[in-house]
Length: 210
Image (cartoon, rainbow, N blue to C red; front, side, top):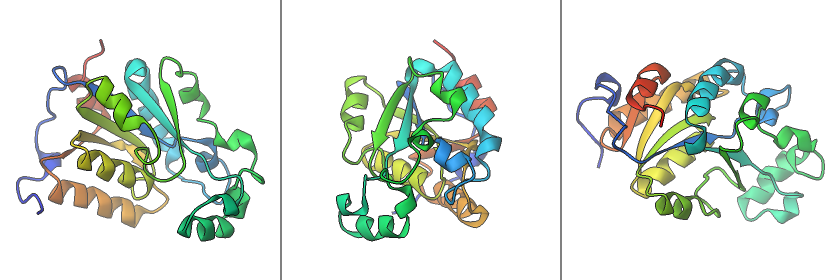
C-alpha cells in the first residue's frame, strides 16, 4: 500500500499556479501558544512563517480552531474521559480568550476564513469538504499544530478525500520532537504520491499570489 518511490522532500517543489489551492492552517490558537498545560513550545518559532503564507494568500486561507465541549458530559465516547482528564480545557472553565487565533493571524480574517471543529480533524462534523469542493479545490497547503495530532488528522482526512497535500515543514510545530520527526518521515516515505514535503520559500515561489 505504501509509496516506495523517491522520498518527497528530494523532489522539486511542484508548480501550483495551475492548481486550485487552499491553505489549511491548523489550530494556531492562544491556548497552544500561551503558558498552559497544552502549550506547544515551537509555535512562536513557526508563527512568522505561517503568517507570511497566510498573508500572501489570505483569501485562500482557512484557519481552524479546536473548540472543546462545554463540559465533559457534552462529549461522546472516549472524548468524555479525555475531557475529564483535561477538565480545565472545557469551555465551562477555560478563559474564552484562549480559544482565539494568535493575533497576527486573526487580523487576516477576513478575507481568511475561520472554521471551528470539535475534534482533531477539520473534516469531521464540519462542512469543510463540501465548501472546498464547491470552490473546485484539489490541493491543500497545510500548516499549523500539532504535526502528530490535529495536523496528522487533517492530512489523513484530506488524503482519503483525494486532495493533494503540500506540507510546509518549517510552518509545522509539535510539543514532541520525536513524534514530529516520526510523522515527517512517515509522510515522506509512505505517501509520496499524495503528500509533498517542502518549506515556505520554495512553496511561495511555486504558488504565486493572485
